[in-house]
Image (cartoon, rainbow, N blue to C red; front, side, top):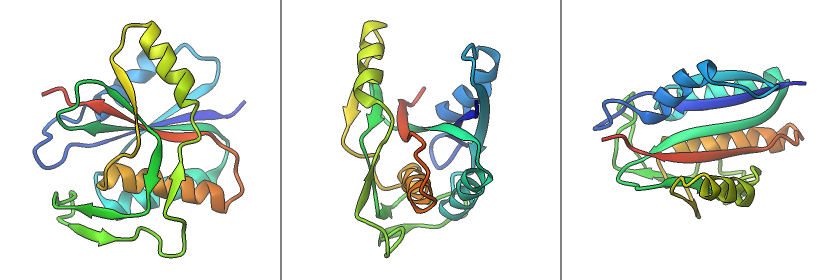
Length: 172
């Protein structure tokens, strides 16, 4: 059996404490699944997060990739349906990069679908009384960029590994 990779992001801009990082750091202490768990806090930068994800995927052995991000102002967990092939946000990443309307990969499709079982995940969260919804896309900042890069890398390698992004409400 391989690993389940769960990623989050470090703090950025006005997000002084990123809830996705907090969850990733706490997860090993409560993990009860028989598959092994690997947790990684990605840097909130376009290029460094992409490099790290490509390396993790190239190393192999992954059974699933669940990426966590933060949705500022959200009141519920958002299960992201599509990763868009565009970086377009006024917010600087942690290397002071601003991307405005740039394709992530000009040779790739306009988007990739999440391959996580979103309907089942949504139903389970509802059964547990956790506010959640399926969102059509993850915006156009670093979390979408990383989601797109991961799906693109998996497709390019011919790997059938479930992969998607879950945006968490900010803790502020």
